[in-house]
Amino acid sequence: QVELVESGGDSVQPGGSLTLSCAAPESVFSMHAMAWFRQVAGKEREGVAAIYVSGAGPYGGTTNYGAPVQGRFIISQDKARNTLHLQMNNLKPEDTATYFCAATNNRTPWYLLLQADQYAIWGQGTQVTVSS
Image 1 (tube, helix red, strand yellow):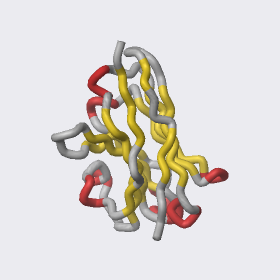
Image 2: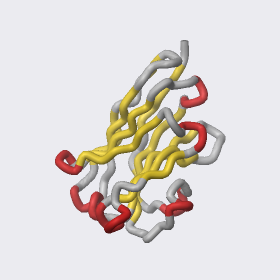
Image 3: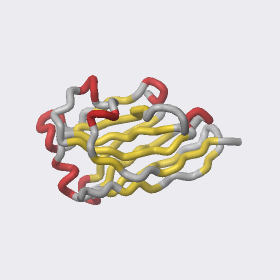
């Protein structure tokens, strides 16, 4: 069973920065896409950022961001360490949520990369709290 392990969640003040990490087996980075989602209790899981990985061929490295985080968050992959990162800048209280890492081997089109139902592999989540 493929395991994704998130880390880096913390409590920060508004305007601060945080970087989340998702450790995954090397095989995951040969799949089609990976992504970060977030969820607040009582609400649906929201797509934050996604990236095509090597299984997507020439599209590998292409990213997609949710509108609320566009220009503030950066998704990246560290292939040498089999790790997916989410760099979060200028954090706002509304960014408070549990953040999940996900992966898929489906040939997901770009416009569906932030849809949770496209992903079959999930981590357990890491909590991010933004508060003064």
